[in-house]
Image (cartoon, one colour):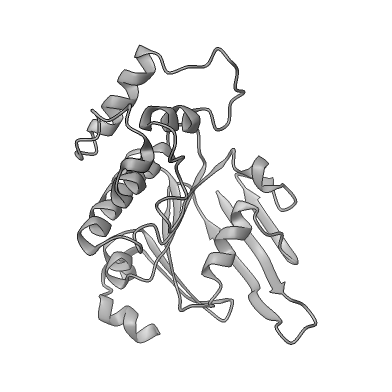
Length: 248
């Protein structure tokens, strides 16, 4: 599904501020796998997501997505295959548009837009049904501006919007870190449900060790721009948060 082959990235090359963000990183992720990426600040986690999304081009190595080399593909083209959920709940939605209008935009991410595209009764009912499944009571707020909702509500809807159109890879960069603990737990439960029900391939960057234990099929640990741990299957199920804490 996703092949990261020998990827390296250096920022501020040949200067006093040179940073080796990634150093010959190779990761193969099969279809439908949910990968948790851990590491301290500066370990290369976010750089890895940004290179996958096309925000940065690697200095060396390749990015293969479903058999296609997308290393040189710009971000706006790669976004047709990749959905992202950011740390800031405000980043994934348009505050001035209604909830329904946000979902319409999300549903057209990979399609051509036209003046005939609208939010008719059929689309409204589809969105209402999907939002009702979250259990947050937001299905009756389709005509409310997105900016009036709480951060947790917006992040939950962002996760749901990520699967309104075809997506091959879901990237999540600490999607619950800006929320209070109770809301963060709810958002993570929703994320896990959406990933499982839609059989997505997903990568989650997080600092929450309990989430690394509870969610995902595989844990990757990064340090100094390199992989230091790669744990999956039975070995992961036997890990505790204390075990992972020792890795740091």
